[in-house]
Length: 443
Ligand code: SF4
Ligand code: SF4
Image (cartoon, rainbow, N blue to C red; front, side, top):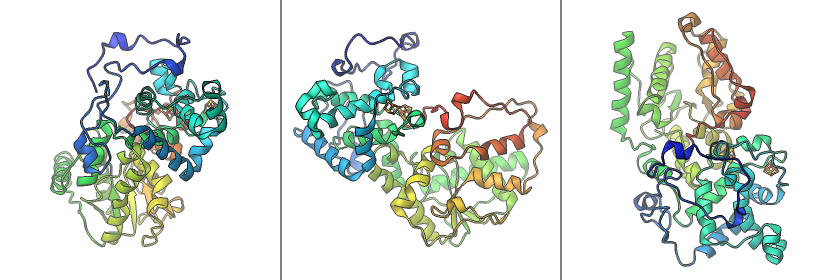
């Protein structure tokens, strides 16, 4: 993040009606409220245009001379390609049901963080250039010219939406703000306008196979290190395999699980569980990232980064794929992977080798979530559990946006938690399941 504003100042927000019209209120790039601009080298690594080092607080963003033409052509192309984009630009009735549902609005009081107004930032330009009423009546019908101030506003507010889709749960028309944000970011990326928090991991993933930039030998060493810790604690020796051809299952995790706390604890849990089950699985040092920061950039970038999972499954000749937990990883897998890279007919419909359960929900993707797999094991009494060992804990569960809203994965985690502890408490109804609030860790 840029230099931080004092906490007291950041907490001084109000929900009052703003003094100025939203169309005539340019962005104020206050320190601590925006991310660094993407570095040139990271855009260059993935062949993105206008790669250069820049700062959002600079007056001059070093845009190409024909930047408006590039954006409007890009918009026309996407309106023709994505029916959802055209529909969402046309269909909003400004009912306001989504207005107070975004965590960015709740935490900032900034009206442009209301989902309805965030969409309007793009819709106003759509109206101006792609509708007859907007061309004829301009401001009167909510249309406005595409200026540098508008572009800066797009950048500021489209990188504040975490594409969590909470607002869409409340929209009577099912308008998916995340899809609008994705379109906004696709257009910004035509001009090299990304943030470093996304562009850095994307470049790493493209060049090295994972967001954190681990080399294959680094992945092996990290996992071996976790196995040593397990041996120290439990006395059990675990020797997972890497890139093993002919394994039954390819296990893919987000690279954070191989790298740092708290993900490594999840990874240690996976390793112990699989050892106990005697599962025939392999990790891959090439498909070493299930997560997908490309998804925070453009559909095309997400597709490029996702490609390696099926490619590696094919190369290794596994039967199906098991995946660790990561929100954006599972949104991409559940909603997009099969369309982009499927059908994966070379894989088999996943069947648990331990319980015989056929995961018919994964018939098409051939990929099963670790929580589904584990809940099924518990249901069939394949793991011995003693919930009283956790009696000192009071436990709650914060649903992850994407598994909850994009997969409907809400019962399995609760089933597991209730089997491993005696004191599970739900948070308020407005904050769980489909209505869960984003943790902010998407991008
Ligand atoms: S998708 Fe999430 S972050 Fe984006 S506007 Fe809706 S609630 Fe806010
Ligand atoms: S809830 Fe849907 S229709 Fe209503 S203002 Fe929000 S996006 Fe528009």
